[in-house]
Image (tube, rainbow, N blue to C red; front, side, top):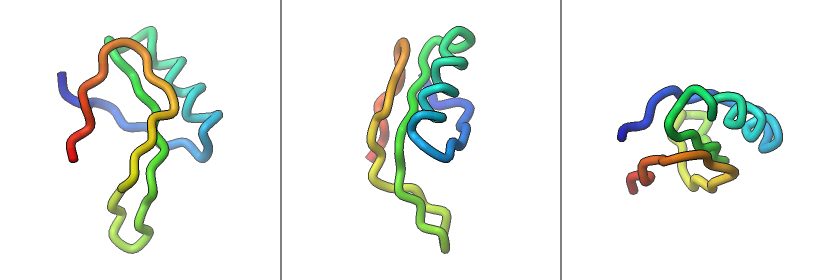
Length: 60
């Protein structure tokens, strides 16, 4: 499995709602909270909010 579509949400409640809606169409869905460096766009410190089905592990 490889990561697919990434959708941005403004808060955890919205992220969970988006993941729940996507769960019926994909074998695995996960919503994470991440820290974003506004200068570089780099994302760090992922924290799992919710997951459905089979999801690949996050790479370090």
